[in-house]
Length: 391
Image (cartoon, rainbow, N blue to C red; front, side, top):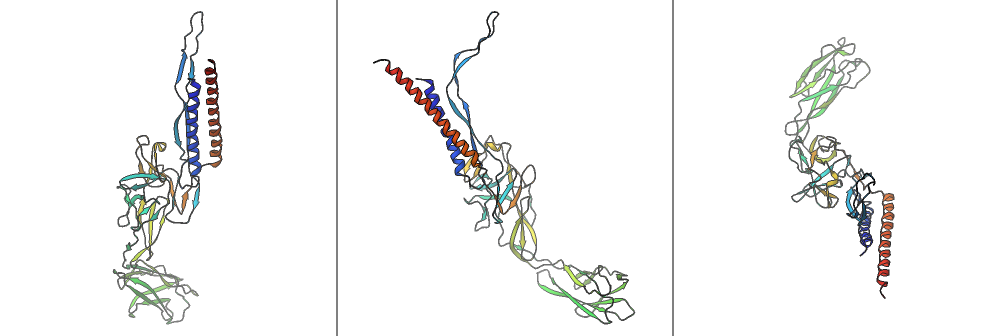
C-alpha cells in the first residue's frame, strides 16, 4: 500500500485532535479559572531510502534520502497565563493575581485550582461548587502558624470574641479658662468589667474660684480625684494616670485656653463579648474576622501552592488539577511570598481563552484536515489506476 495513504490518515487523526482541543477551549470561554490548551505536532519515524555517505578523494558526500511516514501529536500544552478579573462583590470569591493555585481537598485527595469561587457550607467550611474544601492554616486564639500543617479552612460562624476589662481611659480636649467660677462640666464613658458588664465612668470638672487657674475633678461619688492647675493654657503639673474605680485615667493632654469647651473622655480599652459579623481578606491570604464588639482578629490564612513545572499538572475536572511526577511536588506558602501571587477578594479570574486565536486555530485545523483528506483521495485514485492495469 502507498505510504502517502497512511500519512494522510495520521494527518486526519492529528488535526482531529487539534479540532477537539480548540473546541474545548471555545466551550470553556466563560469557565472561571480555565486555562486554554494548544496542540503540538511532530513528525513520526522516516523510512530510509538511502543512507548518507562521506566524501571520497574523487567523489563528494551524499545526503540521506528518507520518506516521512506521517505526523503525530507530540503533546497538548496548557497555557497558564493570567486571566482577566471579574468583580463580583462576593467576599468569598477570590482571585490570585500572579502565580499559584488554591489548595483544595476532595475526600483524601489534595487537588489544586485557579477557580476561586468559594462559599460556606453548613459547617462554615469554604468549599468550591463541587464540594472541594479550601485548605489553609486555621488560627488558634487569633494566631496563625503558617509553618504548620494545613487543614480545612472554615468561618467560625458561632465564634465569640471574649470581653476585656477596662483598665485605662484617656481624657482629652480643652477646659475653658474664661469659665465662671463654679462652672461644672460632667463627662462620662461606658466601661466594662471582666465579664463584659457595662457601667459608666463619670467625671465632673469644676472651675475653681479666681484667681486660681485650676479645675477640680471629682468622681461619681463626689470625691476629689485630681486638681488640674493651668498656666498659659498648659498644665503646670500633669497628674499622670489616676486610678478611679480600678481604671487608670490619663488627663495629661488636657489644655486650659479660653473660649473652647471640648473636654471629653476620649477612649477606653475595654469591650463586651461579641459574635462574628463578617470577615475581610488581606493580600497575604489572611482571613480577618470582625466581631460585633468592634474587635478584629485572624481566623485563618489561605495556603497557596506552586510547582516547578505547572505544565506537568494533570487536569482532574471541575477546573482542578492533580500533581504528577513531572509537575513536581507542591510548594506551599502565603500569598505574596516565595513567588506566589497576591489575593483579591470579591473578584474571580476569568478564562484566558483568546477567541480570535481559537477561531484562527479552528480554520487552520479545518484546512489541515481537508488537505490530509485530499492526500487519501489522491492515494486512492493511484491505487485505482494500479488495479485497472489488469483488465
